[in-house]
Length: 143
Image (cartoon, rainbow, N blue to C red; front, side, top):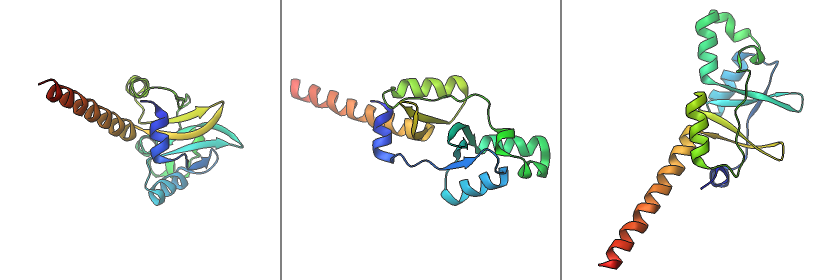
């Protein structure tokens, strides 16, 4: 299965924040929406992602002053992304190798969604259950 299967289930609604907004604004938006990451925009361009992890690290490094810092100042400089046609295995590999929990999804240079490690694991578990059922049914039919 592909990343598209996750987008089909979850939709393509992506919550964004401007790079110049504060870390406090980012934390508030995440809390209000019940999410753990935001896509960061500079004008119309996508700059990257900011997650709870970066906020916690900023507070640990800078104390309470971190809340007044701009999102741009604490977000990762590199953005790891996937395409809708990418496999779940590719997404899992990227997340593991780059130690990230969220990946933006781009198609033809446009942001079309975001997937989390939870989304990927859930989809993979469903795939494994289907495979197991097929094998069990085939075994029963053969005997």
